Amino acid sequence: MQGKKCIGCGALLQNEYIDKSGFTKNLDNNYCVRCFRMMHYSELPKILAKNEDYDKILSGALKNDSLIVLIVDVFDFSATFVPKILDFLRGKDVILVANKYDLLPKSTNIGKVVEWILQMAQKMFFKVLAVHCVSSKKGYYLDDLMNTISMFRLERDVYFVGCANVGKSSLINALLKRFTSRTDDLISTSKIPGTTLDLINIPFFADNKSFVDTPGLINEGNILNQLMPESYKKIIPDNEIKPITYQIFDGNCVFVSGLLVVDIISSKDLSITCYFSKSLTIHRTKSERIEDFLNRHVGEMLTPPTMEEKKNIEYISKTFDVTLKKNELFVSGLGFISFNKPAKIRVTYIKGSDVELRNGIIGRKI
Ligand SMILES: Nc1nc2c(ncn2[C@@H]2O[C@H](COP(=O)(O)OP(=O)(O)OP(=O)(O)O)[C@@H](O)[C@H]2O)c(=O)[nH]1
Ligand SMILES: [Mg+2]
Image 1: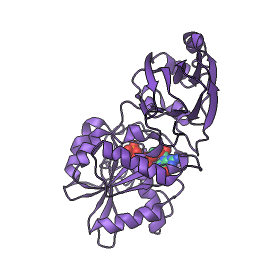
Image 2: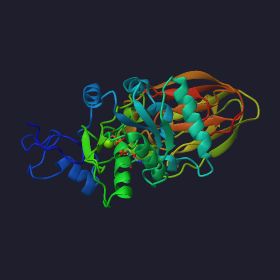
Image 3: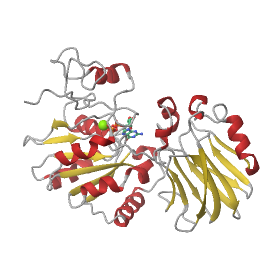
Image 4: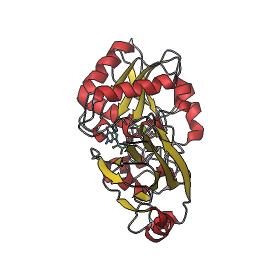
């Protein structure tokens, strides 16, 4: 017989191993010690979900006729709309939800973002029933999403699936608060990818069907994987992003703290618009000083990375051609820069983090 599960993370409750998932002193408790401490002391979790278990957990749970809410992070879209998850979900009924819409500038046209997301889905030959932009943090557009879920549910459970940290658990909590009498969080959430450890069944519908939260797939190319949790706070934006535009000339470069350097090799009348957390430092200087600047200032003026992190990271450089169609430089887990003109650029970044040029999500079109 299966034992009782922690309501916060889905781990099986146990009272034997203090450093393993699901530990609680009293098996009558609803939450394990890890989740209790996350909720009441804002402690960051140390035990995290692992990608090795992902396939087993998900393939065991999803049936061919399941209704899936696939959640992506609208600010980190290209890193959270990933082939591995899409391949799992092909042929199933999927509602695609872009969460964290509150991070995009208020002036963003939501219709254009939805259109952009549909184009991205089409490019991956991925069919969806509908696309929604929401914010579980601010409660934006939850009613619209709930209407779509009700329309397509047909007496089925609803599975919330997606990469780690996109806000799956936060979205379920937000729906519980909006549509039931709950007023506080039920499921544990945190800034650290890998918070939900196993499936969590949350009875929600009058026909005894449930919302099912699932662990997230940890995206290896996310810049956060190269850093330590103390830096996450600065990198992950908390509030609406305020885009900042700079004029920039050949032979100049832009530092985004010590995480990214964009060096302009050739262009004319170039201006770039940066979309990053406001806790990061944007610094312009001459290109010939890049290496010297990184050596001297990372861990100090250019933090993150911290001095401690600096010891374990390696920088690599790659040249890109910004074009009419690909006018936005995206760095997984960090943010993006949009260009107003074609340009040749050299990008220096932390080895292991994914960097790509893409068609701009909200940046000005060239
Ligand atoms: N700005 C903003 N942050 C959000 C939103 N939704 C969730 N977050 C934050 O994103 C982080 C991750 O949220 P979770 O709900 O734990 O994400 P998850 O997808 O369940 O993550 P795993 O369980 O690790 O797979 C937390 O710090 C949340 O506060 C949102 O709509 N806007
Ligand atoms: Mg979760």
